[in-house]
Length: 260
Image (cartoon, rainbow, N blue to C red):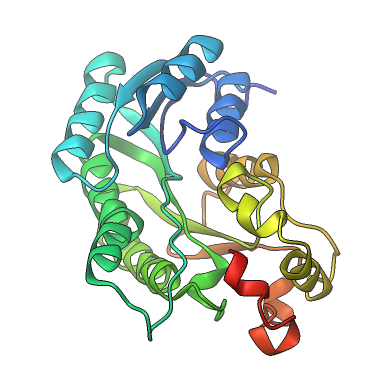
């Protein structure tokens, strides 16, 4: 063990117990890292930080000054940053026909702009050999009905990762993404607790199960510690759903997606 011994790690989007950010912070801490956890909601990260002997910093992923301050806080506390993982996300059911300008802006600010801010400011304090990881989504490359705003934002994140990988390569910093399918977290309970939709997703998943947040955490750890020749890529973790396609409305009962 101790795969991240004495490494300085920032995890953004870690306030939801059982979520990907939370589990990622816990894993890095178990592996010996010094972990700074951040999110917009203070109580969750304070609880998490106390449980892993880490540090908590309140930051809104969509506010650039908050992300800049987060990077500075981690560097001032520990001297530098080795690895940083952005697991912040704001899922918003949406279609093109029903597009709302306020929803578009609020969702994109967190789901896309926030990743650009994160890459920009974490890189200022990340040392050579370091790694930046963005949690993207299968919806960035596959059409998941009623998910247009989130999916388009995640597609933009995948593009940003490629650009950042080229830009930061000369600094010795690797930049990658993880593209999960359906993850068993509180954020997707509206789907997992909707039997017809959930059954439709499982039917289109060759492994027949959804991804656990612990599996995403392990991928984030590997991209940071072990994947020293990987940059500008996305690790798809979805049980094989990308080999088929997510269920569309015509595959389900007429009102299945209405309950999301």
